[in-house]
Image (cartoon, rainbow over all chains, first blue to last red; front, side, top):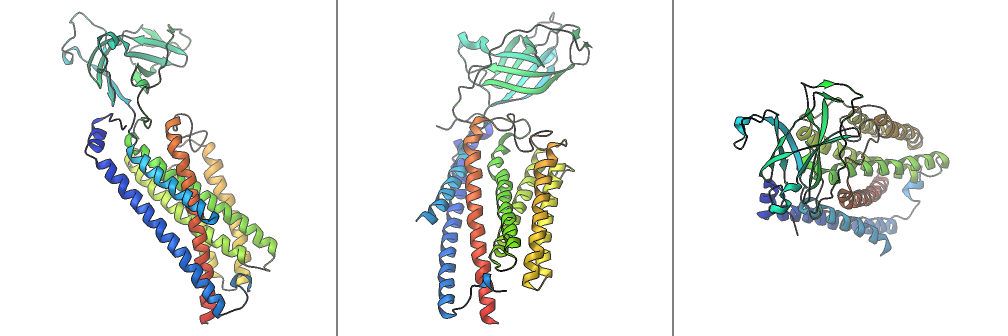
Length: 63
Length: 357
């Protein structure tokens, strides 16, 4: 599937290192995404809790 | 579910881009066309007095054909519409071939592009690959025009070979989308600032949106500068060059940094919202001028000089588009997601401050 057209790529792909590099990047991206999803839901929960315990006008509308 | 689906799409696109960036190989190309002496050529006949040149390719397959096909490696000189085919004397190996350059004394140009046409590698170009010093130049001189059939490569999916850029062409999927994402985020901030001014301080929700978008946009701008500087070091040989496109990008990021400084210096929220909204309108105008308009009128080292400041047909071919466009869309979706998180965080921070004080 993967064509090795020059010596550098012959080494990079042939040794399997390209897949390792791609795997590391994908793991980092997926890890960041999971972190962002969790952070988003936690902030939502915290926001709802604050609203319940301290009812009042929203901050954006308050001058 | 819908509010999560666009984030998942953005994530899937970035995973696809990351995988493709690393597993798609680079296509073949020409790296040199240099004169050789007869002593360097073991097969040279002493009576041949025309100069010989060595074609040097990278990732090419010139020796891979069988005997019937071996004559299919063609070397063509090109200047504007004038073409001349040069005889290929011998093929040393997959990356080296000897070409006889037997030219008339009078020619229309000193500088010629070199094309190589091969059934496997397709048509390869080395711009200004041949520079002649001994010939008489007459611009109106008309030379032979053999008809050539340009071939498409029969290789599997690969990234295009670009002189000087080589393997670093993969950076395209990481560097350029930073600027697209920054532009979209600053655009969101621009619209939010207009809405804030229209609301006449009855609400500050648009001010919050403008702040979050600029904060996230600056982050992407900084990433764009860092990745661009690193790429420049290994392509142009310097971390930074005095170039309108590069300087414009830096000034734009500095202008937006000024937006944050301005906000921090005004304590009254009403004044802060109004002042920063006006500033943001000017900042976005400067961004458009420095990144979109000015580079079209100036010469630049950056790709697409003297025309489109981003890309043209030489910089972005059809194979790159399969990865580049998903990269742009993926990064924009990711950037918008980060902007929404930042907005949420800022509002929560304000709320907590209000409760605690």
